[in-house]
Length: 337
Image 1 (cartoon, rainbow, N blue to C red):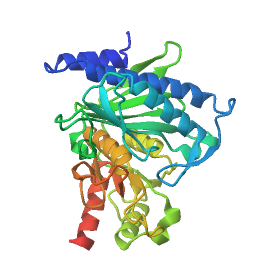
Image 2: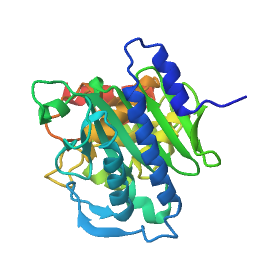
Image 3: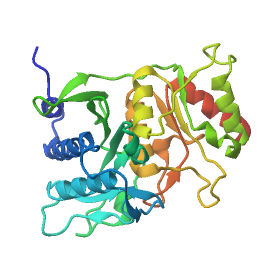
């Protein structure tokens, strides 16, 4: 049987939407081409001079890896010429990137993390690209403003990620379910391999960095103990699986069922609300998991309902199987009701 490519899948889905213009298909197609270029470099990382850091520090206060910088430049250069965007936001750039007037523009906004998990690059651990797509909210001027970009995650048109691992996969949703496509290197196409992904409602895996347990608040400690004990829904301890790359941990739990947690902690008084970025990490993953039947919260609030106040706003994140995340929500409600 002939397999469906991601572009064919998009075209088929858009036929069911009378208002579809094809511009979204073009946007995603250009993003896919960027992913193929990044995948080529990632697969040769041990052979080329692309491992290690650049010596620079990004807006997040983190050391910039060479592949991080490469991926960021590839996406920006390709997408600014796509003719469908008015602006972009990258985890690596302090300000939003408005499309230059020398290029045609559109009304979409792309928010992305060019290479999530880059701290694991040198160890050859799976890493990925995360993206969320929005529409501009105002057209009263030629210039894009921050208010056009600071939209809650529920306003996303689409979201997805590309994971560069044992195989390279694109997982995305446009609001009609979650679909996975695996890159076939022999033909250079992403082929539909995981149609209509559904996360199991009850997981068996918990993913969290327990090295920070001494910095957690009481409800977080209680939650993790619940998953480690036999006094839970499984009547036995959950399996701990933690890679330290959001894309990798999330993807595994999406397929097998489970919960990923990056709670707030007291390590850094300047970052008391968590480490993960609302716009370029938490919101895209939240849209994906909800479309797959799961949940994503910051402890008490639905991630997709949070109104961002700044481009690089950080949030705690509890995301995964519905029953597991509901327990987290109930536990926080007991402490902070």
